[in-house]
Image (cartoon, rainbow, N blue to C red):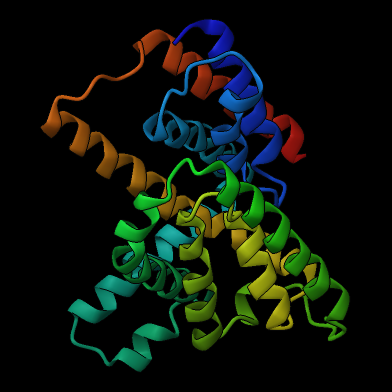
Length: 246
C-alpha cells in the first residue's frame, strides 16, 4: 500500500459514498482497472469510516438530538415506566434504533453467504446494474407526496423494512444508500426524508462494523496497511465526502 493507491481509494470513496452507486463495489473493482494491489475489505471499511465522519459533521445537530433522546429513552425504561411511555421520547431515535437492530439481525444471518461471494467482479457488476435500475423504477413510480419532516413520518414497520433492506448491502455491488433509498421511496417517503434517514442510518453499522473488524484483526494478528498511509486515505475520503456531499 502506497500513497498513490491511498489517494485513488480515498477519492473514489469520497466521490461515490453520497451517490446510490455502491462505493464498496467501486472500491472492489479498482484493481481490475488500474495497476494497484487490492488492499482488502478492512481497508475498504476504513474508507467508509472516513465518509461516515463527514456525515457526522454534516448531521451533527441531528446526531446530538438522537444521542440525547437515546439516553432519555434508556433512563425512562430503567425507571420502570412502560414501553409506550419510552417510545414517545423521540420518533427519530426509536426509528433509528429499530432499523439498526433489524439490519444487524439480517447481517448475522447472511454474513457467511456474503463472504463466499466477496470480490466477485461479475456479481458486483450485476448488482450495480440491477439495483440501480430498481432504484430508478421505484423513484419514477412513487407519486405519493409526503411531508419532509421524516422523523415524524417513518413508523416502526417502515423502519424494520428499511433496516432489512440496508442489510442486503453486505453483498458486493449492492449500494447501501441505493437499497435503503429504494425501500424508503417504495414506502412513500419524499426524496429528502429518504436521503436524511439513509445517511444517518449508515453511522451505527459503519462504526460497529469497523470496531468488529479491528477486534478480529487484533485477535488473528492479520497484516494491516501502514498506519500513516491508512490515516491519510481515511482523511482524504472524509474531506472529499464533505465537499461532494454539499
